[in-house]
Length: 84
Image 1: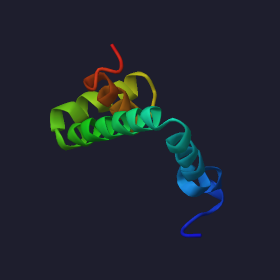
Image 2: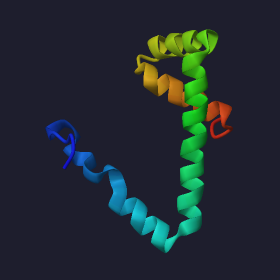
Image 3: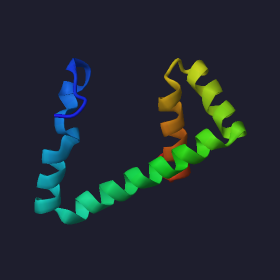
């Protein structure tokens, strides 16, 4: 057990069991979900590295009173075409 504490025990194993089960029972849906998450992470990284996009996400987080990470994820999902 590496670096787990009370705060992150609900995600014990980082969802490994559920991921392994989905990969075994439905490989296509697992791969699609994995690819979507990778795409979101790629766009989120670009947003964090681009000052203009980061400022836009910061303004959105203040406007909607959400965390900056949530605003970045929302914008990344828009860039990936998952949200209109």
